Every structure is written in structure tokens, then in C-alpha cells.
Image (cartoon, rainbow, N blue to C red; front, side, top):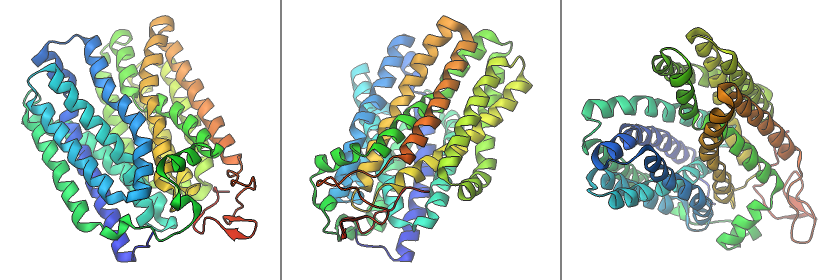
Length: 422
């Protein structure tokens, strides 16, 4: 890819961080109240609400790998602008829908577009930033997204949770962000300067090549287990607290606040820890903190214990999220970064595995059984990331492996290839 000047790259990174925060606020102020709208306006049962809300993200998880690959071929800008425009249209449609069918269609459009936006925006940020700054970049992005989701619902409540206005405003925010990307990100982004084999490969072949990388496959597997643990923790934990602990809903509200506060306070220290010990060790440490937090939830009997273990759990979260992105970034290169981040987004399936198996375990074995399940998933994730990190790079078509400098038999196949972090 044609390199950015330092000033242009910095502008793009700042735009994407700020825009991701605004998008998070917009989605938080609207999507938080989807279930309320479906129940109040359309009278759907909880089961049908779950099916409808879950369908969009599930389709998004299936589509996003192809979006990353397409962005490698035609450029990040056009994919991001298109995704944001359709996401905005979907949100406006959610606010104005007068039937369940129209609501479902709008939700699917919005969810799939959001799933396309995520891996492509991460790939563009890696394109625009020097490697030494990418950890800080991913860390700040994670922080502003969490802050946006913390602030968004309060704005939505102030506007009116049952009103279409939050959805319409959220759609306009997406349109404005799309216009900013179209204006600020250079058109040259769509051009590819490299002539290597990977850059010339068709999109599906590039995605297939990414999925043949054992390192990435183990990272996807580990990421799926992690997402099952922390991606939808509020769903399973709220069910447990409201039925098993006195003042469970009040305690749950405190846990949500604790999670948001720790994310804000611990992001910078977590980044320094990752820089000091490396992304793999930080990932394993985060998984162990998840394990400790889940076991702590299982033995907690009051709010103080639950809040303490939520702090432990959230510190694990702020370690694993940026560390995971850095690990994926380090095994990709300029010609396949979109494909790698797109394939890695398959791990978002964990958002459905977690509530599904967590709910089944809660019903069959109680809270202790559910928390033990999540503790085992966290431990399994650490093992998968360690195996992936230790795996060799994929072999070239002639069977020879890419070495640490990206050379094959003395020829530069990937001039920008970066080895996995040692």
C-alpha cells in the first residue's frame, strides 16, 4: 500500500478513534433500547425478541471476513464509507419502522454494516500508524468505544427510550462520520503499490490464504472463547443476580458502573503492562484474571465481593482486547491485513456462544456451574493463543515456510511481513 505521510497517518488515526467513539455513543443511545421498542411497540415475546436481535450480529459475523478481504483489494475508504452509510440507513429505519418485518430488515442492515466496519477500521488504523504506536492506538480506540457505550444509553434515556428520535440521530452521526472519512482519507488508499503474490491474489484466495495460517486459526479459536466469556457478560450475570442475590438488579447496576470505571482507569496502565511483557504474556495474564474473576463470582455472597471480582475481571478485559489485536496485526502484512482482521472477526460468534451455553449451564447447574464453565473457557483461550503464537508461519505454494524477515528462498515475497512477537 502507498505509505502515508506522518501527518496524514496521524490525522487518519485520530479521525478513526474519535469517529469510533461517536459511533459507540450513537449505537449506545439507540440499540440499548431495541428490546424495549420490540416489546412495547410490537408486543413480541422475550424468545422472539432474542431471535430477532441475535440474527443481525450472527449474519454480520459471517459477512465481515469477506469485507476485510474486499478492502485489501479495492481500498479501505470505499468499504468504510459504504458500511457507515448503510449502518446509518439501518438505524434510521429502526426508528421509523412500523412493522416487525421492516424492523427486522433494518436491524439486519445495521448489524451487518457494523460488522463490516469493525475489522476494516482496525486494518486502516494499522495501515496509518507506525508499528510501535499500534498498541497505544488500539488501546485508545478500545477506551473511547467503552466510554461511548457508557454515555450513549444515558443520552438515549434523556431523549426518550420509546422515541424514534435516538435512532434517527444515531443514523445522522453515521452519515457525518462517513462524510468525514470520504473527505479526509486519501483516495490513494485504494491503490496498491506492492506487486507481491498476496497483493495480486483474488479476494477469496486471499481470505483462504489467511484461514490456512495456523496462527490465525488458533487466534480465532482463542478469541471466540474469550468473546464468550466477556463479550456478553452482562446477559448471563444479570440473569444470575436477579434470581439468586438479594437486590440483584441494584448490584448489577453497580457492577456495570464498576466495569466502565475500571476500563477508563486501567486502560493506560494495561497498555504499559503489554508493552513491558509483550502481547502474548499479557493475553495469558488477562485470561487468568478472567478465570479468577469467574471463580470469584461463583463464591461471592454479597455486593462487596462481587464488585471486587468485577474489578479483577475488567482488568483482564483491558489486557486481552488490545493485546489480541496486536497479535493479529503482527502476523499480517500490508497486502493481507484486511483479510486477517476480517477472518479474526469470526471470533464474534462468541457473543452468541456465551449467552447460549451460559444460559444452559445456569438452568442446569446453577450459577456456580455457569461460572465454572466460563472459567474453563478462559483457560482454554490462553492455551489456544499460546499454541497459535508458537506455530510457524504458513508455507508458500512451493512448500517452503516464510522466515522471520518474510523471505522465501532468498526472494522477498512479503517485503512488509512482520514475524509474530517473540
